[in-house]
Length: 120
Length: 108
Image (cartoon, rainbow over all chains, first blue to last red; front, side):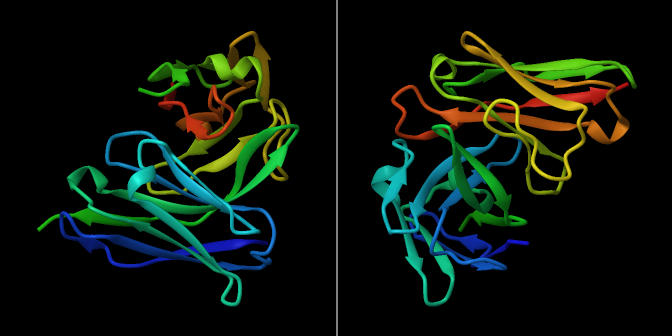
């Protein structure tokens, strides 16, 4: 059974960079697609981006200029960096595994989520 | 605003059938997937590729598509089905992932 666990600071100051790491267990990170998704308080899910098993990245156009997702296969981890955060970046951040089916992209395993608050 | 549109709230009587819909132009070309999220928990995939259920998902959950509208149907809704439901798919360019705004399902 694949398990994902987010880790990182729960409080980030405005204008600084939010950094989170996701550790994958029960399966290799050297296949599938690895996503970051967030849910702001009182709002719905927002896709941030993914990194593929080969290192290719794909980001939400609305966040692209500030997002970097990277992969560390030696540690079975992938990471998120979101720069120049504002209060709008306050959310529960999820890491997740993505798969494909007949041209569809879907997410089949999720981490438990970690709350990141942007505040001074 | 999302490229996939969902009704914010839907209610159903216990044991009855309910349909939750998701509209978007990209659904003419790509299948929708559906997720259930309960308060304080991570989302759970309930339907992928239009009408495939992951292991452990009850068969009262089913999916379908007509034109630009995808539907999640719960046949014989249970109290445990009360949750937020999100659809997702590829966007109209086919290059990115998008989620619908979510539907809060209340079981009466």
